Amino acid sequence: MPLVDIVLPENATDKTAAIYADIQSLLGRIPNALQMWSASPVMLEMVWAEISYFMRHPRLSPQLLATIRMLVSQENQCAYCIGFNAGLLISVFGLTPEQVTLTKKAPSQAPLEEKEKALLLFVLKSVKTPLQVKADDIQPLKALGWEEVDIFEAVTHGARNVSVDIIFNTFKLENDF
Image (cartoon, rainbow, N blue to C red; front, side):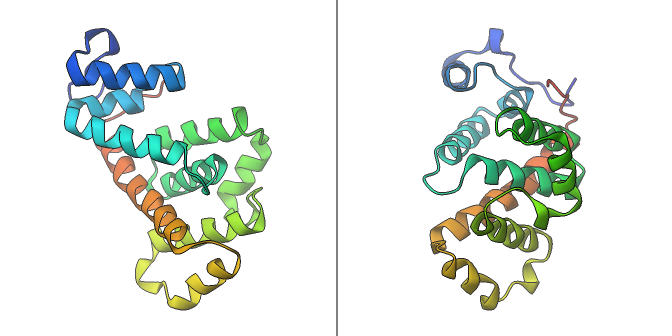
C-alpha cells in the first residue's frame, strides 16, 4: 500500500477518470505506476501527457527509452522501474533475460544500434555526472545523425526518471507485474 492515498480506477471521477480511460485504451490496464500520480490530479495529467509524447516519439525508439529508464533506475535503486522496464525489454522488444542482465552490468553492450547506444551512454553520463559533460561529448552524437532536440529530449527523459524513482521509492509503490 503506498504511503499516499491514490485513486483506484473504479473510484476515479472527472479528469482522473478521463485520463484513466485513455491509459486503459492505450495500455490495456492502469499500472500502479500511473495510479500513484493520482495523488495529485494535476501531476497525473502532466505525467500522462509526457508519457504519451515519448510513447509516440518520432526518433527516440521505445526500446532506447526503456533501456534509459531501466539503467537510470538501477542507479537510484528503484525496484519497480528496473523490473517494469526490464520486463518491457523482454516481453515487448524481444530481448533475452541474459541480454537484459548484460545491459545492466555493461551498458555499452546494450543490444542497440550504435547510434542509439551512443545516445544511451551520453544520457547515463549526463544523469550521473552532468558537470563533466562537454561540447566534445555532443559533437559525436550529431555526427551520428542525432539532432539537438533528440539529445535534449533523451537527457530530459533520463533526468525526469530520477525524480520518478525518488517519488516511487519515497511513497513505496507496489509492484504489479
